[in-house]
Amino acid sequence: MVGGSMGQGRGSGRRVAVLCLVAALLGLVAGRPARLGTAYAALSVELEDRLRTREPAGELRLHLGPDGRDIRLAGEIGEGAAGRLERLLAASPQVVRIHLTSEGGLVDEASAIGDLIAARHLATYVPDYCVSACTLAFARGQDRFLVTGGRLGFHAPYEQGLFGQVFQADAAAERAAYVAAGIEPGFVDEALSVASADIWVPEAPRLVRARFVTEIVETDRFPDSTLDDDASPAAARAAILRALPLLEGFARTPVLERLAARYRDGYRAGRSEAEAVDRLRREAERAIGRALAGADDATVVAVGAYLQRAMRAGDAETCRRIGGEGNLLLAQEALDEPREARTLLARAVGQGAGQGAGAGQAAPAEVRDRRPATRSPGLPHDCPGLIEAYARALARPEPAPGLRALILRKARPAHEALARP
Image (cartoon, rainbow, N blue to C red; front, side):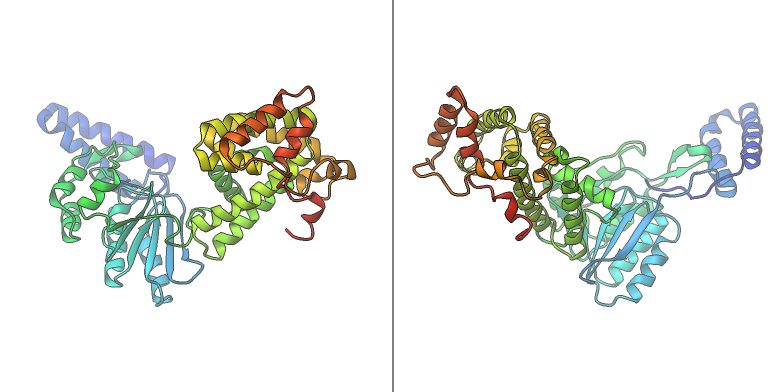
């Protein structure tokens, strides 16, 4: 959001403001109706400045990144944001980059943040989204990086009147700031022509052509910023469920909490998002294998049918990994249908939870005995052969034993999980 001042009005102030506004409007209607709209906007904005009827800005998180070479800014840019950044920069001479995740805020504060970025020759990086006033700060980066799939959003600036009213403002200062940063003038005109109530999110190639973005980068380029806006355990759980929706099948179990905690640890250690998600996938695949080891025959048969369907949907390499590893996580992604996979995993977790297998504890002897620890001899390695092997197992009068051999042959025995996590 661009423009507006922050503050909370009192009830009496609101009543006075309304009376003043009504009286002024009556005078305008009687005398100069052609100027009603402009005068109304000016009066509403002036009264807002005096009475502060607007809700306070949301929380702004501003802190040094894990490796000490970047600063993380996340949230709404309200009053005092530039001063906070200035103090943090003064205490952190080693900083070379600032990560920006923001819905915008006050133009003056965002512009002042941009001045600080330019003075220190910092790079700017958007790991998710930076819209409205935030883009004024981003544009001042010496190098400007946007993550693949990230969003920069633009619209005309506005001023905030009483009780949330929005009035489009003069964009001359914003236009000058963008052009001075080297942005293509035609792009600037297009961005600032968007109505204040709307948002324009250009595609990455357009941003690069306009010189607004220096480079589009993958998630392995810089330290993870996923939890910049909120690094709580709940936010870590939400982050891993966004990355791997299948993990919802572990809801309300220690497995989900453990995976979220390890992801959070990786964020604090400064791992890139790609590395953190890769580690999460490996741990999730092991946890899913342990859960399936404790599943009953009906669940194993349903999982086998799901895997076979996913093998047919993926390319040859994906097919080999799904069938050769019994990889339910990859199968869910190949089919892009998480609901059925989550249901199957939740069933397996519920069946194994009483035995401890679903939570990564030692499985009882009858579970361990029916899960082969080594690869079966003569098992096909190519995609058509694996699909046929699953089809033969599913066609048997008692399909569960054959499917267990296919699905679980690479799963580590559950009693080893405690010794070698």
